[in-house]
Image (cartoon, rainbow, N blue to C red; front, top):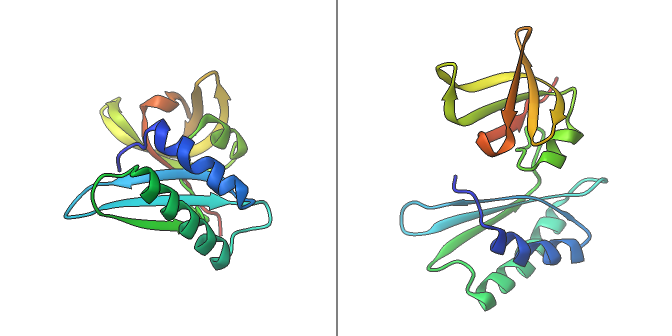
Length: 151
């Protein structure tokens, strides 16, 4: 997944917020003939299909008018789900105490994948405990992170 530039986020955030939702995250995937833009939305009382439909319609119109994505693209709008991806420091702060799996952009101690308990945020780094070992990872160095749901 390619990181979405701040221009695209700045374009879509007001659209999503005007529909009483929170823009949780964006992912832009290139491959094949068309690009895929995923928009994750959230709200305290939950997201329904109708919310996704409204955000999709409005966002699609804005993207087309602004010609924000060159060429053909597919637009998906959904809730982040139980295994929600984490993109920003504030999102990590909301999930302190939860289990998180993450993939680093570059290997640390010979590995890129870690799964452990998110125990804190220190500046621009997250604190992850894996098998009684504490790690500090800068958010900028994380390629992908997801909350691990508990059942």
